[in-house]
Amino acid sequence: MPLGVTVRELVDNHANGVWKGRKAKGCIPGGLSMGFLTEAEFNTPLDFSGPGKAGCLGLGTAAVIVFDEATSIVDVLYNTCRFFAHESCGQCTPCREGTAWMMKITDRIRRGQGRLEDLKILEEVGNAIGIMPGTTICGLADGAGWPVKTAIKKFRPEFEEFIRGGHKSNELALVGAH
Image 1 (cartoon, rainbow, N blue to C red):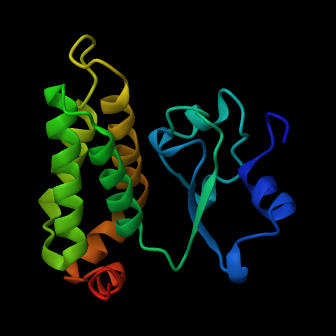
Image 2 (spheres, rainbow, N blue to C red; image 1 turned 45 degrees about the horizontal axis):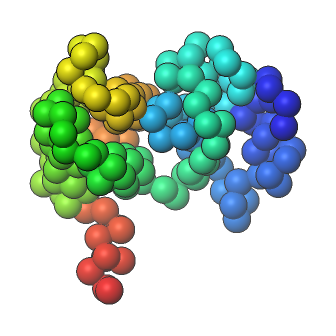
């Protein structure tokens, strides 16, 4: 697709809509490290400045991932944090420790043991990881923080409801079945 197509155009006109006719909840507009867009931000153009104006890091790889209303943002963020913790080579303290802590905290939330203050901790780690030039060898730490910051900022009510309700992720049942 040409630069400038909106997420909505991409999903509705070129991808035949959301899977099983469900409603979109949000998307990752350009690879995990770019952050998240809500469905309300789907009119964002996929070009070099559009995602940035909507609070994302940028266009990145332009690999758009859409998740629907039946998908828990808690699961999406846990899988994102798990990916970055796995990808960390462990050489740099901010990345090694930051990605591991973000994964542990999101795992605690998805297991129904989350606390509202966990959201503040996730924001703090997401804001602090990788922002000091020269403290990490590569950009993984900064990339790992961006999706955490945007998920908490843009989907906070869903996280709070999940924590207050003491919910457990449906994904846990699937993991335990193997």
